[in-house]
Picture (cartoon, rainbow, N blue to C red):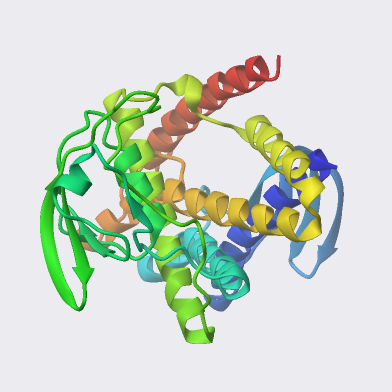
Length: 344
């Protein structure tokens, strides 16, 4: 059951991403030759108007084929016949739709169970927070000058602080803000360095307006989480063996289902919605990176074209995207191997 849910979850997220490209293409009068779910050989498809809708053999990935790689095609309705701004809107629409999907799902989650407010439930003795005078009921508003709206943002800041550097922390008590410097410490039986305060784990109920507001904060949190993870990958703090590909995602969804099943359908659905928000936002952020062959890489060439008012030579652009595609496929192969190894 977990595997089926994983395929459905991943498929819906991919379809929504490609729907972004498809929608803006249609709005700009661009011909879409094929809208497909999956990769590889076509299992079945149906021609509707000028577009063929198809399902491919491998249930991961998807495509909205607009002939954007055919530099010679400038006929009416072709991708390259449109203005650079129209083409930009089509390219960026996929990631934007992922963020929209993430926001809608995050808002639903907050409306359903509430949000984890950054309120201190208790302060532990022997740690820096207690020495700096923090108390139960303090509301944490900033970490290192950055605003905090959710408790998970505090957890992320502590998690990403690999070197246990002192953190500047601002909290509110009785309407007054106080800024202190907290030094993470790892005492006996601690798994990792801690700042010395904890949450109650309870969620604050939200009305409809707060649900949207904290849905935005949740979206921002997952985007920040993705950027921080990418930064750790680039700086070598995590290795490629820790990346997760399609098989790994299937395994994660299966684990979520298996662990949630005893708690009933409500917990299963909530955990799957949370996972969907993370995957959708992650896909949106990664696709906007200026990497050849991804949406962000194509956007870079369009921005250059807009600035110089002349398209980059199609041969050069095509070569760059080809190199980027081969590198991405190599990375996917490496991730695939690690995914398979983790299964055993």
